[in-house]
Length: 291
Image (cartoon, helix red, strand yellow):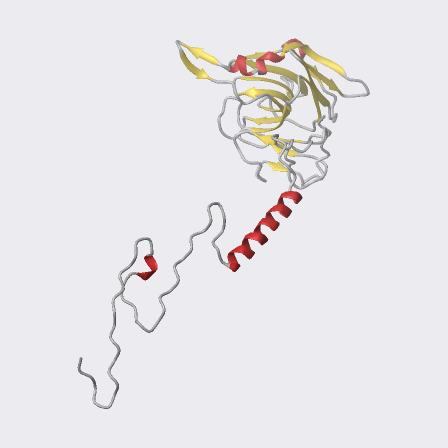
């Protein structure tokens, strides 16, 4: 092999054939340099064989044991929801998590807890048959026996304005004890119900309210029976007949016509204040001490 004058001849380059199973020796290498050592595969089930990996593996195992010791074992059951108070003094600027509204957010255009601190002010909404714009604030019934009471301040200008307490399931199934204006323009207490869309007024139960009085209205559920009551002085008095609480059940709400499901029952029953204004104006009502 010819070389450059004045320089020693270069050493020849030799080819090394890779041996079976030794991927590190494939290709051409300089004869003066030692071939790199083959990579030693990791032990089965363990880390690679070098110091850094062994240290990391030990540290990770220690951390894993420490974390497992600090973390409580799962019980298999979800944590129960926080217990909600039985009463609400309406002393916060927003509704508590126990309250729900029907088909509209709790906005300042119809709800206020700041105009009169300690009172919930509700502006009247649309009719019970309307699917938009109802003014209903309610708490879910979570026990077969429960009660709800509220003090109502309301001055209706016509029979088309009403405010009171409701036991409510759907647009078609509800009970409503409310303050409204009678034929002579005086405030009266009236009970109306809807059973699968058939509306019924309990005319015999109408009661005239004293001028300026803010009645307390209540509803009591005892398994399959539902009763309303009211108080304008020192004593509670029943209002209207004993009603069927099953009207507010899932089974009663389901309606099948010619084999086709028209209504389903899955919402659950609620109780709370309900305000209606069918004149296009705005009535207002204040509630205290729901139980």
